[in-house]
Image 1 (cartoon, rainbow, N blue to C red):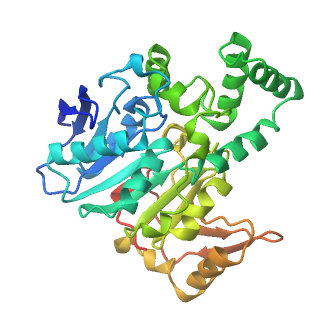
Image 2 (cartoon, rainbow, N blue to C red):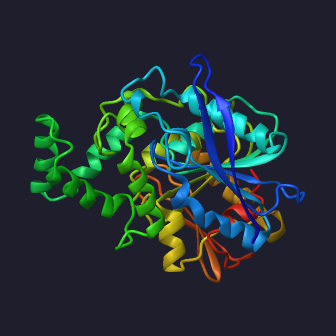
Length: 373
């Protein structure tokens, strides 16, 4: 597989600060196949934990681009800007994204994959209707900081009482950098961030980078733990812009994800052309968890009969799910040799068994096959 690394030199608006953004290209951007730009989460980690998406290049010849956002990994760091919320803004990262698309020569035709914080950036980017964006994939992406915080509060209550007390005491006493706080945070992460033990090397590497320079994360999150968000991200929201996204959009989250169904649902409800897939054996890192367990899940494209999902009976159920149900969940799970299309409403479970079409697809097929909305 052809791999190319490079750096984009640019100047941050209104600051005079020059910086570089590191990127890696898998495959050939001049192949004529639409590339996928991958936007990592955090904010404050690196692209390492998403390298497995390069499987797309191996299996489908789709060019994949990953990059480290400014302040992270192999891109320019600004530790002197710790705590400066006027510098570390959403617009900084969106400007970087646009510049990179232009620098790579793909601004006229590309798909975008965003994970967690990267999905928040991707959704905002898409809401501005860039001419070259053709499809949007939002994985484990919350619709707002408020929904994220509500989810973390509820999920922490599932932990042992002693663990909950340690969280609360350390936060109350300002000891979120203490060893005991880190220990309970890791316990939480083992259930709702990544359930693989030991943690995959690629994910460890991303966290190690953040440990070396936590400037971005501490400034925007406000604490070293994703379960406690006193920083600017607590007020972040996509809710007013979701209906402006016009491209076909694929939503994904895990059954035990930090980004719970309630976090994802506004995206499903408000984005006009959307599908939602849930990975039942994953938390926040389905691209690692399902991949390593060799579970096979996928969404079929037009060639493989996605029309069965938009048949009259299923379409009616989807319409109801988007307008009337209290606890909405739309997911596609492959149980070879049949599909299970599940819509669990509040008090009952309705499952449609669609056996007209079936296939076993790898995780990468989620992105390699076109999806119809």
